[in-house]
Length: 451
Image (tube, rainbow, N blue to C red; front, side, top):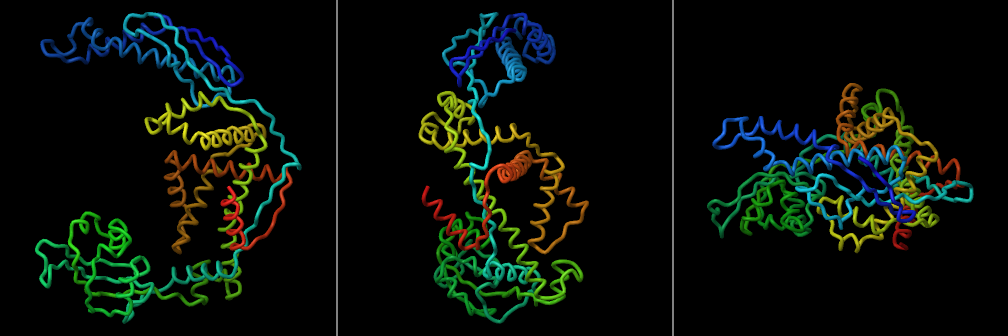
């Protein structure tokens, strides 16, 4: 098997792959003989179907499969050995006419998109701003409220309030009679989840045992939201009528925990925090940590925008459009790709720039870093609910996340972004600025609207 590369221009090439019968025939014959041993057909004992019949039935498909496998492996080997920097994957030239049944030798052609060559030198001439987002009093107060509610206690107030959970007994009626075969059920509803303000007003102030009537299908903005609020199957209420009798059951309220030593110990461990001032300082620091990703995200967006504008290299657009359609598994058409190609193009260009930053600066993400990142994410999620994860369980949860390829890739991408930002901070001129959360939101919103 022989491969010849013909460069059409700097961004496009064609690979010509010469395949002879000797390249594939032995494997095809062995595959067909294996198929013969397994074959079972009327009129023949198992494994005794004539080879000629097996070849007639399966010969072409086995031949095509083996040639495609061989060619795919050879092209991959060629790209690796010649250190070709390609975009996407090679695609068969559409104009080829092949007779798989009668031909023994094949000359196959594949078009290939080549990654553009360009220089990317980082220097102090490249200027960025990194915003350290500082939590304002409102953010801190909200975080304190969240913590005190998380560690609070459940009470059963006399009347329904704005943030209560209420058990309601629903009975579908027709006129004043219970509807035969109608819906009946006891559900628990969060008052703050109800989006129909009229129904919310009706429930507020009601007591255990109070009765009222409303159409439960309208408790949300549509059937789907109503089913979600009631925690019932959508079809169940979709097929019901419009008349329901409602009886208020148990009213539950989460009362905030007192800000005292008991709370400090539950949240941060025994005697780690001893005063309210220390507690608030700790909360503010945690809130600042949570907002840290906001500043990082802004710089990431600014960085992408800057480099896309600074670097004006071209792409093999015709090839990329074909590859986007071919790799979409039927989700995209040539028309949809054409209509949104400018966005695809920006995304592809940034991937090329990102790869160059990583390769030119020898940036690496080790597996240990990914495991640690997964653990940090898990610990933060559990801490939201006031729970600490034992070390052995943390390892187990981390491995579970990393067993999912999509999650693992996302963590790798996040860590590479962190390293790129640190690289830019080191080599470019990056001005750091403290900014309040509300001012930051206004700044980010203004930037989004300007684009």
